[in-house]
Image (tube, rainbow, N blue to C red; front, side, top):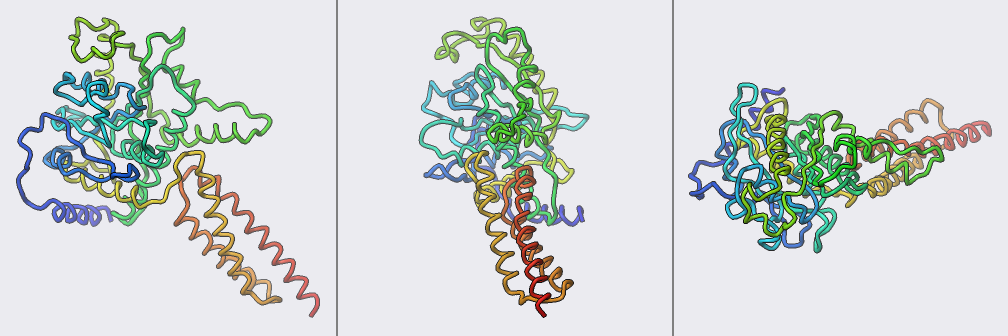
Length: 413
């Protein structure tokens, strides 16, 4: 089955990537690979960035930096790549919100990973929480970065807010959902989501006696809920949905490079805070140590395969009806559950009582199967769905009422 799937994949690649030469002369620059549509609600691919990736014949890995608007993501990426602001990714205070969508540095870093030559691309993402955008757009950017990357750097200023945890949780849920949908359509089978290495990067000068790893650990602990408070239950559910990350995450703190942030681009290393320079170099080593090639279907991807994979994911994200925030997932699924209950009820209304008990059981099982099929096709989120599906107990209640009505009608014969 796997061999046949990859034959299909390769044939699609060759049809998608017709022969031709690149229109780009200089790849030592940043290119957009995913851009927003004019309404900032959906995403579309950019030819320039795809060309930069398609030409790579070795396995690909990607390091993506995600975080709030104006939190220093582009400057951080330039530092990781040893580039100045004038040659690397556009920095916010120099240009008006340069990063729209997702951008890639066109020249990958070539590294040896377990004896395999690997091309590592660095991705810059549009910051969330800026004005003029919908939450759905932010969620798609975050989810797409989560799916594409081998290392996901979650860049946060100062501390970890509950909103940061909720956003990450929902992005992981979204990524897992649409990864499954897109890969299933490509290979005709379910494929487990393989999450990126998550690096919590907290940019602050003082941690008040605790390590950044302890800070992250405490932030992700379950909140005691002896009174069964629904709000606290939701907070803990958010943490549960991060279970897929497992031990696949680490944390790192980075002090501010200098108090005069608007002049950072004009400063050499000797002018920056020595503590920052030391920690930045440690961060480079850490990122290098956790990079691994992107794996799909148990295989690494070269440039053309990575682009096809990206196409499939983006198509699924743009087509899919999704809630706009993690807290709305249950509301979203609730509407689907109500449709499932309605479908079951309408089917069972066609049963003319009284009938034989075995016949009623068969009608029930057939109607339940139709309702569950509808739920499987339309529900959102694997983790949230497990909780939502419990609510299908309403069908059991309806069935018990029909059984009692059938017993009553039978007794009158």
